[in-house]
Structures are given as C-alpha cells and as structure tokens.
Length: 339
Image (cartoon, rainbow, N blue to C red; front, side):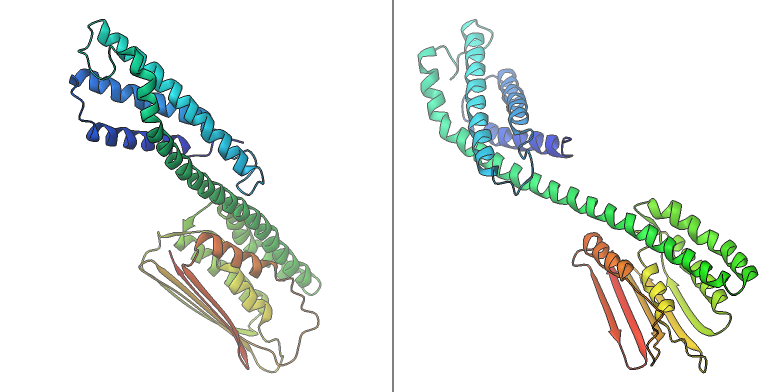
C-alpha cells in the first residue's frame, strides 16, 4: 500500500504546533540559541519517530477487526519511542551544559533527576500521543474514504463509456437494416461524439462549453436519425463556459429522452431541453412526450441512469437535486447542481 498523500504533512504540522505550544508555555530561563536548538531537535525527533511508528497504521482497512490491537501496539510503540528519544536528547543537552557549551538549565547537570523528569513528563507525552493517534486515525479514515470514492468513480466511468458506445453502435446497426447510405452519414456524424467520449471522457473535468457542444452534436445526430419525425427544442443559457464539470455527466438524461419519447406515427413526438448556468449553479431540464402504448421492442437495463446517480452522489454530495417525474403524457427530468 502506497503512502497515503497528506500523512507526512499532517505529522509535521501536528508536532510543530505542539512544540510551539510547549515553547510558549515554558518559563524556563534558557539562552535563545539553546532554546531554538531544543525546539528544532525535539520537533524533528518527534516527527521522525511518529512517522516510523504511524506508517501503515491501517494494514488492511479501517473496518478491520484487528484495528484496536494495531492501534494499541502503535500507541505504546510511539510512546516508548518518544520517551527513549527525549531521554537521549535530555542527555545530549545535559552534556552540552556540563561541557560549558550552554549555561546550566533544567537539562543539567543533575543526571540523577533525568529519570524523574521523564516520569513527570510521561503524562504529557501520553496525552500528546493520544491526541496525535486520534487525529491520525481520523485523518487516515478520511483519506481512505476519499481513495475508495475515487476508485468507485473510476469504476463507474469505465462502465459509462462502453454503455454509451453500445448505444451508438446499436443505433447505426438498426439503421443499416433500413438505409445503408443514411447509416454511413450517421456514422460520420457520430465520429465527433465518439471522439469526445473517447478522449475528453477520460478527463476528470472539462469546460462546460465543450460538454454542451458534445450534447449539441449528439442531439443533431438524433434529429438526423429521426428524419423530421420529432420536434426538438433546445435552450442554452451559459454565463461562464469555462466552468469545469465532469465529462459525460448530462448525456444520460438527454439520451433517455430520445430513447423513451413517444413513437406514434400519427403525432410527432417532442423533446424540450433547457440548460442554464448561473454563478455556481447548473440546472438541466429535459422533458419528452410519452407514448400511451408500451413499446415491447424497447429494452432498458438502466445502467446509464444508475451510474450517473452514483456519480452525482460521489462528485456532488448534498450539493445536487435530481427529480424524475412520470406525468400523464410526458417524462420530466430536472437536475440542479451546486458546483
């Protein structure tokens, strides 16, 4: 398991903060040079020992049944390590004071009190370690949760790409049974959407204007495929086209509209698409007419919709709302994202 990003930074900042508090609260008279040397020595030692004994604190995961035992062993090891390390530093500074390098202070000169001094400091060391281990536990739990979410998101993205491509190829296959020339023309138009899906779809974020252009290309292809049998109305209101969003996040709702729009030969089906971006809010409304007669040929696995719901939960936790309503004669989807 690789080092969890941020752990070293956490350890360094924690012990610097602790040593600053010790510095401020210590009223011991001591030359400034020795005081600074003590600060850096004890801080560096604490950081090194904490890093060694906190590495791989969670050998498997935070829900492991062995976690309490691992935590206890690490805590005791860290405490013993710090006590021994501080004892050696006490001896070093005591020797420097005896040698006349620094004036006498608490480190002294009085070697027989070192053990007593350490015993007096032990409650403070234990308290610091409890605080350190508790904060490290929370830090690593949060880090592992973040890693887990990123892994889930990667899996969902890998499922969305084949799902989208499957629908593209399926459209062309169906059309080839009726009109080869039209299928060829459609394939050329689809190349733009596929290029975006294959290259930009792998990125974490893309400009909103690029995502919208992708949606427009997709809609144009669908309108071409429907040969004027469908009325499509689109409204795009964007204040900041450079705002970045995850790619292929909105296509599923538009794709479903074309998939479930009414297919009656008597009346034209209709789709209304409205996307609005104001400040940090993106809203998408998609409404399509609904057929009163069920289409037995239409099969839907729901993979796309389930995946986009899962992506929204990971990417925008508690910062989005999604409403999918089935009305008497239409389906209406409303998505609002607070970026």
